[in-house]
Length: 187
Image (tube, rainbow, N blue to C red):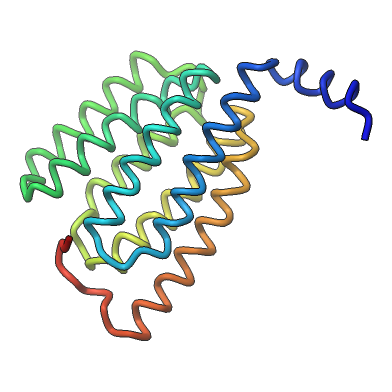
């Protein structure tokens, strides 16, 4: 293994800042994959909140403003939902905030809009279908995040997007098999 070539590649990608971003991404995305195996909504969303904190850190280092904003809003949205306060008005406010903030801070062109689109999809459909519904939402929105991760050179994130899609598919089959997919928000 030629360490000089590895170092040159890391420097060409953005140096130590990029490398630290990939490490934060790795921790966050491991948690995202774990979310695919959790059966209860509340635990899924709390795990997602922690995962999003790591991904926000990665976004700060990669100047991924759209992702930072949307991930922060997602944490707020998850907490509103878990408190039973996510109604059509709060959904509209959350999505509206995401769109306005993306309009102001998007630095990623068309790909920079994918986090806002994912926020809309996840927020609008959150609460429909219990645990299976959340897994389907994670599956759908992770496809969009995969394209976004490629656009910001978050290669670790892209690999884990694929793994998350696989874990969600497995999780859906597991929930259907044991009949616990329509559970309410539980501890």
